[in-house]
Image 1 (cartoon, rainbow, N blue to C red):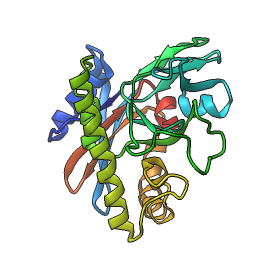
Image 2 (tube, helix red, strand yellow):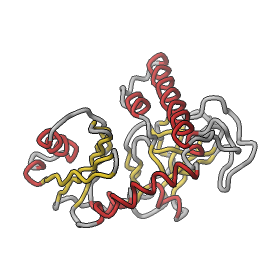
Image 3 (cartoon, rainbow, N blue to C red):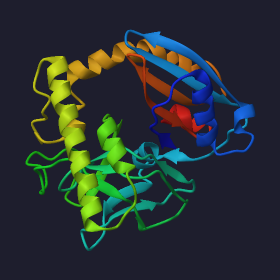
Length: 263
């Protein structure tokens, strides 16, 4: 449900929205509103009156204590347990914190209600740590993960995740290197933009902790206050197109307005 494409023009964006929604009649049912702009960021909102879904997000399920992400007994496979009565949606690019190194989810995945031990494809996003944090965060242990409440903000890392599902070790290694490089670039950029090292004391190599930098959060809030209400104005909004400095960055389209708002 997350797509990353470089296209231009409203017609191309509508065509992309139709592809994302996956319906032969999607283009006729879909409209694009915007752009709505603050500083160097513009957003377009994707509307679809027919979209419907009752899924929870992984954040919600974890907050309710009905879903867990953990290593399998072999400590090589990430697993998800969904003990709720609803399907749980996990978006590609979701950052996970904890364990012996922070992770990023490789693919969109829906975990059906009551499903236990479902494999979850992830990549390490914290090169340099392979042990529990020296200063543990609440809810973390060596085998269980929590969500960071963020998607990885790196086009390079996202493209590496989307590069294919080849099971060969060389292909996976190349994708892993791309994720590491993308994560490290974001940490450097955050430090440059906010004028202070973006390193969490509990784990200096952690991207999710770097994104909690108070100056970065304050800078982001300006955009949230300027643009968030646009996405809350109507009940048929299912997606958003982000452009920065006039260049398309990301398109996120979901199966319902409810899921869009939660994500």
